Length: 460
Image 1 (cartoon, rainbow, N blue to C red):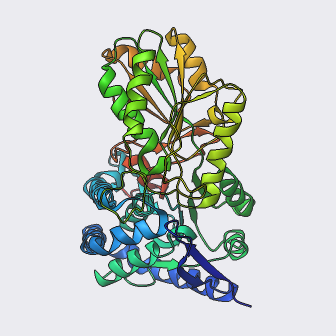
Image 2: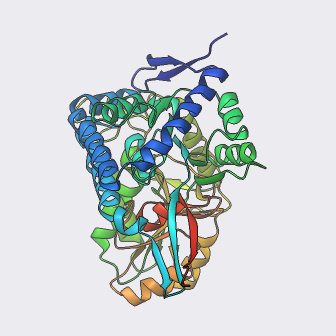
């Protein structure tokens, strides 16, 4: 009996799209085709792979007028923000620009007797499991460099954004990337598990929940298949006494609320020096009260529904528990809040780390704000988390930011900005945020393996 994946639109709860999953046999056949196609793909000149990938990226851009409302239907982001093509193109373009240098042989030494060097060799078949919150940008982080490096790619996208993988595959194929080199698939959890456990892939990249990452690692146990993961986050912001207050409020609150708070590196907790605390809270509340919650297809909407009712239910539960424990909620319930996917954005004060809203990932439009009196106190609070993806520091002192950053358990340290992925830097995390790293030269290193050459010359 076949299984059907259904994308439920958060706009009205209707079924927006549905697709049947592949059978176990068909899934292994797809992986087999990818393996056969990989050698020929890797044998193509690097410049040719780069040109084909970038042509595929451009083809996605040509679809943007259709993609933007489609994303609104699938996961609720307002159309006024124009989709993801800017970041999608920026990341792919950077990886294309650095490919030759990143994948170049590492010369170790040559003399009359020996030639020694290290090559970067593609893993083979790379399996990309992408999330729904930024479905194009998160997918391209791995898809573009994996293909450029000479791997073939099988993409499995989240059910909430069911059509994204189809769009990407259609675009890349139209640009000349062979169909077996880049495949989009629809899979059940059981078949996904069987593929990984059955050595169908040479590398797995997963972005999603901690539980999902653990399932990937369990499936790969004993296969020696590499698994890269980006999992949960509870990213902090710290506003020091010398910060540009207006810039800090604008950026951190946007980082907490944009995309209805559904950002991997969204700001989920804020620590403000006591000298700025009251002004920060007042300005933050004013910003959030000005949001317009509504249908994401409406150009006037600034904050749309959460992608799924169950995600909104979790945020409501965290807020309710915090208020019951003494937290103060500053935003009155919006008229458009329907108790379902449409959720009032919320700012909480008088919060503590005993509350789930300051410990568990919220992944929604809520942020707790706490008063601190020193760097030491702020550092201790920022590190009091099972997650470590990014941290945002606000100060006019670069050296101080670096000193504080050195003491924070995180993957990225921002100063005077937040919620941005620079493709020149490694996108990585620590603790329960996962392991591995994407983009930058390190992204290429993770999508290839080293192969050493120790060549002795015949001299006599």
